[in-house]
Length: 130
Image (cartoon, rainbow, N blue to C red; front, side, top):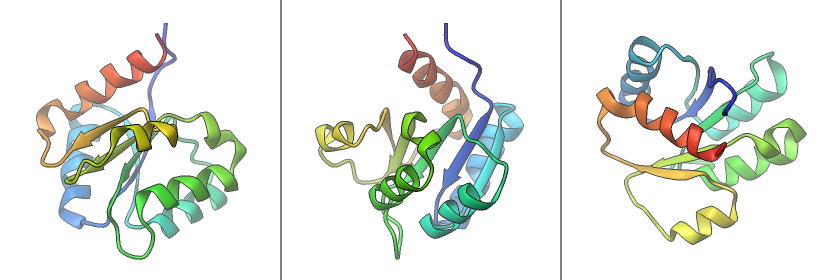
């Protein structure tokens, strides 16, 4: 049985996508969501706040620091994050095997259906703990 999924760290540079995902995951899914607009902001949040994510939802293509680099630094910065499941969100799905080597649970392609996003995350979460 999987532990409960409550806290999600979401890193996305596009403001309108952050707003859509916030509605999908907070209002529809009932999750606690910490929104970050960049990889640097996510690193700051994790380093300087009490927020401990159960799951990280991470955009792949962002200016400055992309998702894979952000993930690497987050895991190097905080040892607790080494085991936190990560799901990439991207419009360009690259080699899934490369993402798996990085320890990424799955990839959600953009565009996505906001009405089913929370349910899809819950299913992936439960699959991770099977």
